[in-house]
Image (cartoon, rainbow, N blue to C red; front, top):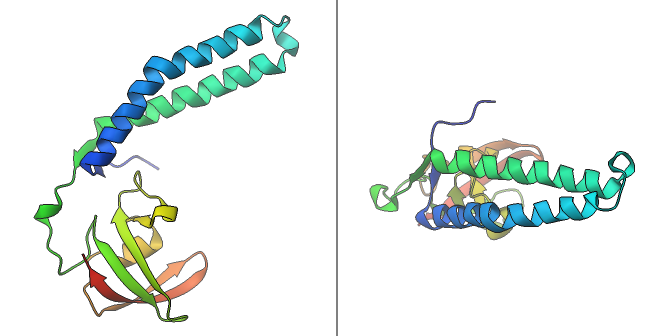
Amino acid sequence: MPEPIFVYLTKERLVELEKELQNMKSNGRKEIAAKIAEARAHGDLSENAEYDAAKEEQGLFELRISKLESILSRARIIDISQFSNDEIHILSKVSIRNLKNDKIIEYMLVSPEEADFQAGKIAITSPVGQGLMGKKIGEKITVKAPAGLLEFEILSIK
């Protein structure tokens, strides 16, 4: 699946990613190199599980650096003042009621790079996020999710 042309981020998230990338490049690479050097010192590399683990960690670490660089190169800052509160858009904070169990849930719709379900941030590309985009207070939606069909009523948009 090709990466989207732009990645929409809040200013705060952009700063977090920039700091993470800088830390990984300056401190993280040194730590990984030290682990590899220490494992190499343990002898025969063909039977050295510690060395193999350190090299695998290095590969995953470099992959994360590459992903962060890609995200930052395509990042666009979202200016929430451009949006109105009469319909749901990225960065909207919504309160919805699950019509099957009457439970009220609050979410903030964010880009996939900022999604954090535990913090109540869902991606606009998720099934619920897609179902909510462009909707207004009082509307009822049905979302096809892995758990089955979910029905919600939109209570508020901030």
